[in-house]
Image 1: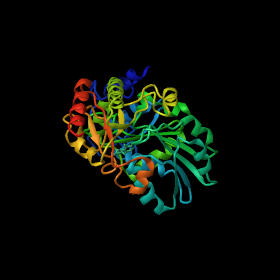
Image 2 (image 1 turned 180 degrees about the horizontal axis):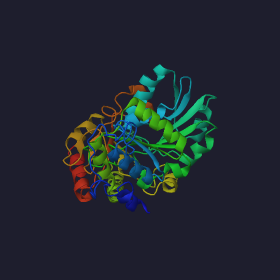
Image 3 (image 1 turned 120 degrees about the vertical axis):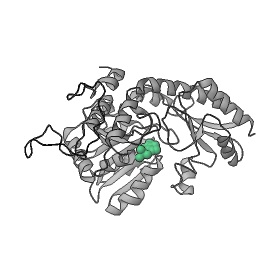
Image 4 (image 1 turned 45 degrees about the horizontal axis):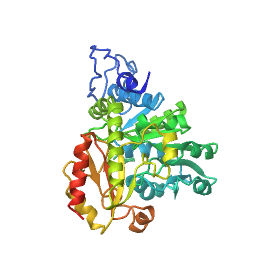
Length: 380
Ligand SMILES: Cc1ncc(COP(=O)(O)O)c(C=O)c1O
């Protein structure tokens, strides 16, 4: 089965009880047993729920696996993966990553004796130098957020020692454009809140692995901690995921056109988009990804306040956190998604006060470019 077929058919069998063609929302916390311990494979919905199971199968298949665990949010999925580590373990982490992931690692998990080293993972020598005897995990985000740097997943997996794992947050690329497990990664995490759900109407996360024992370990944490996707949220995410292929093609086509438009403007200082030949890792992106995604970051010339003024004048790009929905969004990372990172650290990573990040939606691209043009011309 090819990608778009899997998205519509895997996990989506007609309901065994009624024949309903679409997987029902099994809005139940528990299941009636005929005798003690005698049931149809479902005993309690924190442990297993048919709607969530259908979503887990569907999303695992999109990453080329059978083993998925769906959570209430991307952060819940991330924290379940980190639950594989023990006090004293160390992780090497991408230094340009989602601010909430940084917050979880630096302010919550360090309290439990985990240690983290943040490095520019686009520099493989820097990753190698960060490895310690107690390194158990490499946490990769690629393309990175918000600088859209590309990390060579295969090169990172080649550095992995016995007993250590490589996890990739594949939220930005989506499985449609990037398949980390096929590049040697052990774990893929998504905030399904973003492209997988695709309509900005539901939170969710998923952790997908190649290995059955690893899957069992994550399932154990999923059940023990309980941050599971509810049946209605699982159903909405599953419905969104069915159209992932067509949406991603349009997101990427629109983002490419927007990036090229911005690059051609004299009042734009920098444009970050892996699909531009001027992107420093364009060749790696072409090798590792089958498309460049829908996220574009850029820096305006002039006073940093211009960025805020510009962002508030747009008609179709809503000023909002998050990304990956059909509608276009704009965000000011320094004040919004990455506000929890200290300013000095933000500046070091290029997240300046003039930086803006676009989640380019699937509206007509002519309207999007006209909107950007009008707001840029109004804020010289
Ligand atoms: C790359 C990335 N990973 C993880 C998350 C966290 O996901 P959630 O908001 O669903 O918890 C986000 C959220 O913005 C994200 O952008």
